[in-house]
Image (cartoon, rainbow, N blue to C red; front, side):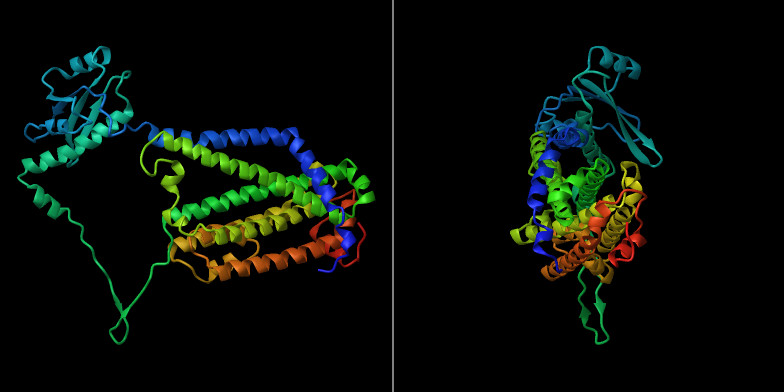
Length: 448
């Protein structure tokens, strides 16, 4: 790219001014506060909704008595074996000898730490139904744990009643492994490796892709709206007295990207803090929400080299889309026209995102192929799909390096194109400049 040194001189002043004004902006601060609040409460809330209601199996159950109503053809069922566990050592298991309604009324009024278990035969299967007081010490989590243990015990009692020993049951339920071996024409085995990703890895890639898409849209919208605002308020005319148009664009784009990155990095830190809080609400080595759903092999590929590759890919991608957003903002003169002016940016973003989603689906179905490699290298999609693929070990250094080179080439071409038309665009006031008009401006065949 050939460009005079003076054409970008002064971008630091524009950068500092724009970043300072953005950070002081009330809307920026309010939106950041709302997102920070969501980030802090998200993990504990998910933990509470998904796991928080479960009882800890190491604690003593709050259920004092279980009335068993056996409506099956099986002989008398003895659940007293459960008293040998620490959780149910204080729980009494007894057969229901009174009227069902009488006992339920007593449980609701005074005996709220008791429950009724009704066992029925239904559609060639057994159904275990619990009834408890609407209010009291016995919660849904306690019933879930009790139901799990009593179901296992009932299964053992049913087998015993049928004359099936424990050893026979284990033999019946033993896992049967089968293996299919493909042979070539000479009868030698053909080794095949499964290159498909797991469901957890797919959702991790999809989550990274969606997150980067939202960050990109946020940053691009900030850049475009800032350009239009300055054009409509005539501020840009005063800025152009001392700063070249290209320096104005570079400083503004980098400032808005920094403002968004400050938000994103802060939110990521808050999410990790939130995950620690959610971990304290439960127990086990994978107590936190992120620990439960993030694939283990991600941390095997989490090193300085891969992190740098991901950051470079994301940074180059954001710069490209931000420059495209700045150019889109410069083609309109009023905020009301901005959505129409952002059409090209929206299409480019959607193309990149959908190519990335398609590649993630292919990776889960059959592993890497020509389409996946194309998605990794294509400059519009690589910033979205490639970082996640690198972190799960599905993209090597050569692929990442190739994608970075292609992104650098695209950014150079983009800056060269914008540099030739940006001064005309930034001073334009009137009807929206369309895509075909941009190429005419670039060739010098049209005056805006």
